[in-house]
Picture 1 (spheres, rainbow, N blue to C red):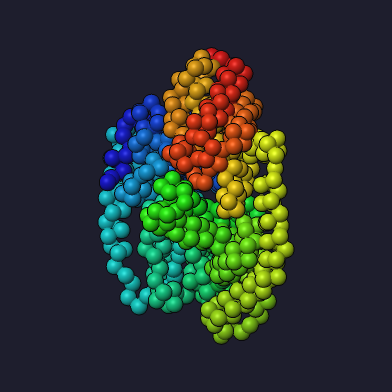
Picture 2 (picture 1 turned 90 degrees about the horizontal axis):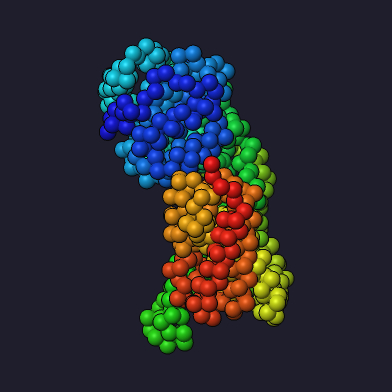
Length: 618
């Protein structure tokens, strides 16, 4: 696929009217939308702005490449804009920006699309190419200049496929959060600078299409130095014992000569391995375990979810087939879901929390600690503690062993770390499981002994929590609590959680249907998809509406979700499946009709509050 397949004349603006960064983004988004390339212009613009918040895409030398990968893109496309007078795009060099390429990649863009979009970013490193764009008289001239440059680049890429004899002088890894533009611009800049200095180099790119030109163990072993220019997670332990420079991806574009000079000089720190995440801020020791409690918890929860969802639904199906499990197939489903998948749930949670904190050395310690929590009946709370304990013990062990001779670095990683991490985590967890088990049983007993009033209050709270930040920390806290209660055999709380999570998108869908004058045409269309998202228990469908009008949408969503959560408790509904929305509605205890009624009542409350409160569109 060629770039001209994605950049057409109807997405080219030769005389931009924009005077600043915000209006430039608006103008290019509108150009894409007018050309029919977007499903939802406001959502795509939101994705562009989120990318800009991470770091400016004003690269300097008069170039900006705003880009985003989003469901709001209908057709992968490129918009080109040119401002003859230039404007302030917050460029890295502080100079005015003249050339703009807005890259729109669809969420489901295939590898060929991504490779083509990424190739464009490398062209702009060529001053002659930039000059040709600045001097183009017509849209056809722009396309012709790109076609010519692309053919040159394809010929160059073909020549670079021949590996260097005797290995490479330097190696590099590049990566950015989106994986479309900066990743490949940094790669090309490093290649060009190395060539100028007479050095051979191989660059591994961590882009949206996956890892390309992956470095081999032999190449790593023979390299003089390795440059990691990345602002996303990179596998770093393979570089243990090698000279490694770590910088953000933008440094790979802007400070290329400096990086190659440093790598060539040999004045580069040796990477110690075991715990590096790569590419944060140029400091190999700083930030390796950073990211905070929520980041580590969510790493555990996200990796645990497949076990929770798959195992939970299989358990529910086993009950649906035969509540007494006398049926052989029902018993097999229970053995797979409850006996295996659910049994792994807490160890997996703990292992990935620990891994988020300390990378690979924490994984085994967290897994063992989580299994001890399960065997000791310490429940979900024990798994959380095991995960954080295993991770921070791994960091402590690494620090304590930092003074060992370099000759022992290999045996430290494969022997000392796992033995000490597992031993210390295991010993502490064995001491903790008894009091944790008592707390766990006390919580279960308290919930089991709650009267109707208290259960309704709990349902109201859990339902409301699901709608406050719609997928954020509060939402995930309620969801995690619901899963913990399923694991403890109490299915009531999670029924409130799922009902509360379904209400915001369903309520908004109803509001956009029955209060059309309060919403734009675009919002009405987006509201239709919320019927599907809400029915599927995807609360995040309400986020675009909440972002546009948080003062009205969030209170309306919380009110409806709290009503739904409270009604599920009042009706005595229980839900053994942790996910699935309407698709697992037949698995509830207490009556599926009453559960649907609770959800519908909550959605109607949200729709009415929002529809009455919201102002009419102009």
